[in-house]
Image (cartoon, rainbow over all chains, first blue to last red; front, side):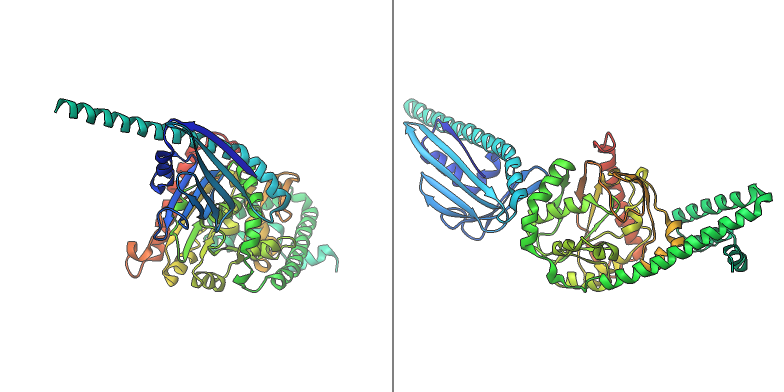
Length: 164
Length: 351
């Protein structure tokens, strides 16, 4: 089952990219995620590994994932190493000055689980879709808020510079 | 020799048989069962004395009861032999992570939509190494809390982490339940428990076993291990942390009326099948359900499970802990948590 959600954010790709790829932020904006721990020495980038769990229905589902694609300020994709089969991707594309489209793709399932597995994928989709939508909305709010703070900081510095 | 003659020759009436049952039960300090046996004595004596002019009929009844008990014992012995022959050898390698992984979606749907399950505190289980999980047992022969916990454990830690469960011989030898071994279910024996913990696995035990799982529905919020303390010696021998797990809701999947300890004694099931109970319940689709050997369709009761903080026995009770003190502590902690879960429930079944 593959799910796809996107949102436009009033911030440059660089800022969004930095926010999304920092593992310390994940629990702040990813809805339903209960665990996101760095496994190993590498915190981010190609080959970074995370142990993650997301609450779906009665269970916390997830496992060990690895970043398999990392194109700066454009694409970050991950794939599961253990746990439920999953692939995910962040796509960051500039729409204009200070405006960026962010897309979150997520594919999941359990190979070999047959018809029951297929039905469970269908049944889980609405809940996961809601988590993804909320995650993007929270990401937008947090990044835009950070953008506003940065702009305000710059203005304040300019004012202080002018008075000095 | 006629049936009646045989009954007289052995010289005991139903009342005496039941009284003997009661005496032996009380001797083993089994309070609840003792009360049941006393009830049986009272009932049988009433039958025998109310109608003194009809002693003959009474004696016939006693003979019939004895014959039934004898037939039950013979059947119990035969089934017991079958069960013993069918119990698989302890082979921890029968656990199949790929099989479990493929079954997780089905378990997930069952837990999420049928039982609306909620599992809390899995982070209390040490992330690695051997650990003894001790649970209260509910739900009759079909225990939804075990299915829910198996799902929760395997999705939380991954199917790669070895996880075994001890089960009654009868469960493992039941035709059609062989798949349980693929989940890591092994026969409840000290040998299997030692092997599992030695292998570094997490091991789930239900000390209350058949005694607790068939407690009446109105005792849903009660932890009742029946004084079984083997799990404490196991944790001490293997020096592993003990993690209590409490669950509620299983006892609402049917209306459990009685453990039927007296029936188990009378039929010999306690001797031949290691069954201390022959439960009596009202359950789907049977209506009155005696024995629950064919299982039942569980009502969709909400299952809530809470994993409590781990207990390091030697750290908390010194190098040589007193078994009784530890037992009181563990069951006390579990009872407090279970009472909390019971207080959260507003309606039976619905939760």
